[in-house]
Image: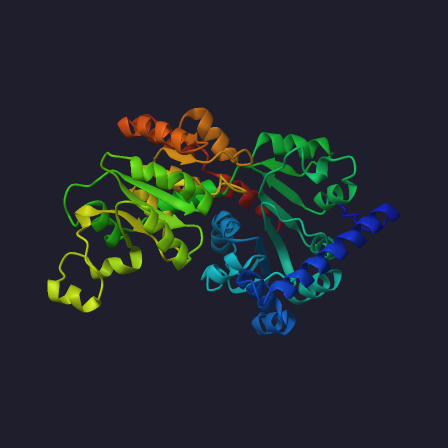
Length: 445
């Protein structure tokens, strides 16, 4: 078990002072912008009076607590297979789930797989000390990119085991810089780190860390679960089959941003072969959806309006809804205006485009890959090992602009069998990270 040394040297003390100042400054900035920014408002409101809220949640608990922390919704999905496996193997424990981001907490605050769900208070020394004292976890799991100095210090001081899983490291991170001593010491706080790839393992071992396991990415386990347990969505079936006729080729566009649509809309407007398209924005904004609809030259419908146009409705019933009725066989685009069904939509697709890679980062491509489809995305994918792998193997295609998207898509439209099989096989052979995490848990508890 490592001994976590964070603040016992003058240089480390100075860096920790700067770290704590930045945490307080960030929290203060969010409070300033909260009246004008909905996400900042949720972040601030969710942490107000956090101590009495958490104390009330845990008041009657006498069971040992396993604490899982996920930054946001994507990390939650990454951690979910481990939470569910832990629940099965250690039923005497209660699970405390925390989130940093409102986009995770607000969607999963009622997640039935956890006994208590909370925001993670800002990582100040006082908050970390109070949170650990209240939660009294017996074991802690941090998913992927979570390295909060004060929480790690308090947990290790209390000799509470801390596991990091599905972690991934790169040479350009602060841990591996000559001036990164403070951040390297954070890594020594973990009882065990389970990493996604060989490069990460080698980087950590190069620092002298020994409690490291190459386990892979638990997202593979999660998306495989989703594929096995998939449920049909009648509305989407109606859309794809024009209300029960011959199914049409379908492209699912998941987590689309404006930068993605700037490339996609000209492509879609110029594509002349049969193709149905589902468009799921990364965030649901009515004005954005309506703007995209207006820019597309063929008919579209919002998911929330599809119940008003499904087979079985009489013309008089349709008239009562006040919705202009467009026959499904002339409706090419279905816009998703709700949250929570994207991972189930990919089962209907022959092709998938995943958004985010024309901006800061690519969204989850494994949710599509598990259903065996060729996958398209923008150029900023280098930090995502699965994207790099699938491009090398021929299951995914990075595009730079509308022209390159059109060219790549046309080739796959003619024959996508090989790319589809590559995607499906890639997911299947990478399943198993959850079992390796649970082996470490078994040795730890």
